[in-house]
Length: 241
Ligand SMILES: [Zn+2]
Image (cartoon, rainbow, N blue to C red; front, side):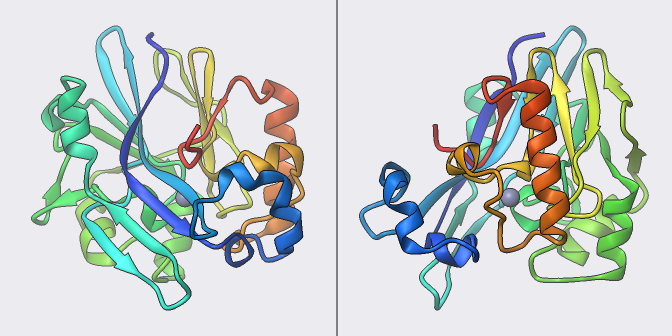
């Protein structure tokens, strides 16, 4: 298995205090290198590409075609994933497996194109608690019912802790950010999903993200993953470095 490769779909920028509600502007002074000239944190969005003998897998699917700015000064830019996969020699029909760490909108953006699954030949896998949560609690933060949930309905497969999704790819339940959030061990890497949003949380694992459904449980999952695997093994799609 080759190391998991992050493939970008775009970037999100937003003010630190809007994203990490328990932090103050002073808390971020020591992390000035993470902030752009407009005072916003920069987050990558995209997918991890895992290549192993006999299969191609993607973990998460970016934001999708998006160009939006919010009144609070956040910006959302996505849409580059398919071109960046092509640059890696990967066509959508060649992908065998799509795993969702969770179903927030910045992780499911390329689920469908024109009403059909973008990665038409792939198995699509999520934790059952995640799927059921968004059926019951639709939200603009979550998956679009028409573009994400409906195209997946007949195809979605469910996983639990410890499942081997493919040779060397194993599910690690890491709930808290969302109820059915998972991380994925792939060879020597653990693709952490949104267990971590910013490298600042390596120093401050108690800093919770504003959209955590259960911040205490999220912090517990973060500490557990870092204790077990260490920061060097953990790969985070929202980190810019
Ligand atoms: Zn995210």
